[in-house]
Length: 476
Image (cartoon, rainbow, N blue to C red; front, top):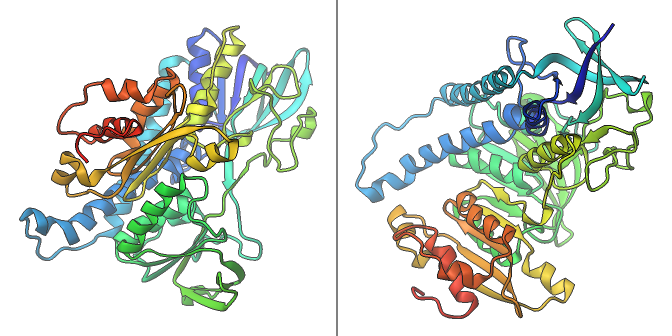
């Protein structure tokens, strides 16, 4: 007889492992299935985010930022550096250590919360006696049973037709994090979050980076005033960004690198020769090997699992969360859905507010936002007020030596409720949290303007942007 559980979670990424832990906290007997392997073949919990996404990319961004500061900025502080070197093997090794620490941390959390872990690929086998049989294909195949199933299988990098990933020359986010030596010339197709972050890493370390973007605007999902400010900074750094291009044939030339034929925004034929090419054109829901047809689980035309507003699928007691369903492909969105689903299973009222999910691009400068952009408000015909404040006028930013960017706040013209906040500049990823809290409590710009912020701090720029909504900034 198969092992029986109240809740079986398929996938151990941010959504899956958090869902499993929360369900266990609520008193359920929980199992989690995940197939990621480390270099030794052991379990590597944490999914794409921990293994080849959020965590390792931030580790390399931090290392490359230190190198960039030592190369170009320490002298401004009176710090002389002689004989600066770069040990890529050690840098990659540090990144791998950070990843392993996160992997091991999740294993510990499972033990602490009494979550049973199965190492292998989980797939639907059958619906039987009011439960679902799930096959685990690991070192030894077995079948377990769950009354409730939470699918959290994540997403995979989208390949460019005619240019399959080999993770040597043509790279997804996985290969981009394992480059062993700094490429002299690096190409990126797509100026999304992953592409820009990886481009930033390798540019700082010495690569000549060229980004080919099909859209005519840079960072189309970002408030365009903020996007233009970011592009100015990237242009100044030497990041080459070509917009409105049409990519043609991509040739993988082995040890000679990669050739990309494309048409530029003017319609003229161009060619790009690079040592490595990163493809960053989005991600697709991962249902490979899940066998949804075994139980009649519905997928949409994009291959994502169909769910309602509560993450319920078309099957009773089968739920799906994170990248494998609709909505933004963000680790923290998956986590919030995981908690909400576990609580719904327990008869509680789990809640996820899509309007207050923050977005962050960890480039230099960082870009972060929450809520609506100015373009969205105009398209909706909503009357609004806008206030901006530059980091150039912020004392802490001057002391840091990083005055790039601004904070922009948008508020309803009549009620003053904050509708969106957009930041480009130092520590934007941390500054956005105050704005998320404010919007969750439906605060007004006046509320932020009246709150005392520590001086000197970067957060004063948020206060000043709120003051600017009413045209009464104090320091600009």
